[in-house]
Image (tube, rainbow, N blue to C red; front, side):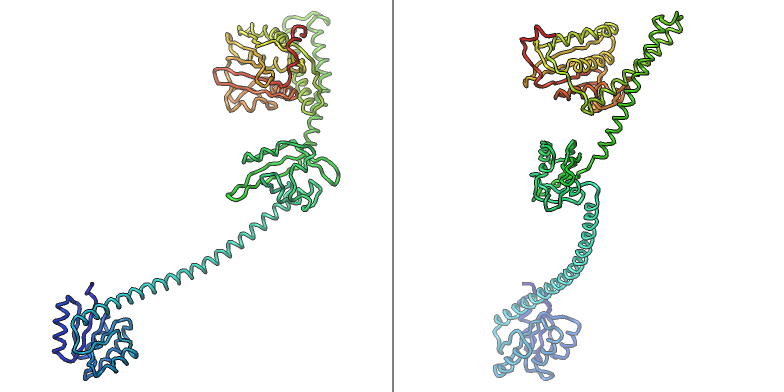
Length: 516
């Protein structure tokens, strides 16, 4: 028990005060003040807060009830004990009801009972004090919570207004965007569409929502299945049928995933590329017309220069012959570029039809080898051919020859004197023909490999080629026209390997002895 709490004892009888003082000291109470005059006690209490007041009832200046009533006004939570004689019991009960004293004890008292009531009174005061402190803390917390609640309400209103404004701006952007915008489920179902997409399809929103996106394509495509990869996907080469004018509109669709713990969506931006396609067509037609018209004067110039060089138009000295030969080679290079541009145009426009024939692969590759052997010997490069087994294939022999010759020519040009070039062919596990051209030349940086088969790609970032930049691009077009693919593997300073794969090209290995 902590006896540090302030105790006030008031009794006009000094003998009683002495007795109480001795009892309190024996029980270990230290912070106790004794008064024989209730007025003096009140004056003292103006500056000191007590935890417990023990007062006699019958005192000449003022009785105990009057004294405790005034103390109650100062310290309503202090515990009060009234000492009274047996005859005063009714007044004591009245004091309990009117003043709200904690206990009354009859004289003569039992010391043990008195000490127990004093200790209980102190504990009561402490509990009331702690309770008041908790109430104050709760009141402060409530006030703070109310302030926070008001602040939160203002913040919510502000955020809600900002959200409404943002949604309004976003809706305006979506509704007036020139590109179609759709919200797609992971299963490919359209959940929302903007007016631009409605214009592309020629349908109203109610005829679009909850339908599969693939239902709007003019042809079935498996590209939409890429949406399961959970990353951005660009799908091109698609056409959407417009239900109003019955025309197929070429589009590109860029999908971006929007994932959360509960749902998964894709936002698709559908771009009408009709104008772009028309511009590409006009550009390609212009190039085709221009290059076609250039062929006639170039051929005429080459033939005229040849007449000079072979002496048909008179004898030339050495200096004249060298100059005219240089002019002839320049015109031939220009004619080669014109022819390459025409071939590229034919493949891109779909106007070139492959001439598929059956021929022996090993005989065909030996013919290609014999054509590049002079250049290999000139650079002291070892060139070899390896065929796993003789097979007969069906393909466009002329176009395939163009690819192999281009790969071999590139390998020889980028291999130093004394190096090697290996041509190999085999049938893979999927029964497709794979032809590879390997060299130990300078190699290609890894970052440049994806650019090799693009139009007008010349050399690498380290070294620029003097060619047209159309050879590998045209080779890719030829192989893809066969339904195959072409790729490159390379390591700097160690060489490169270019490979082509043609599926479903094998005819019958028994025919190889008769086909050439």
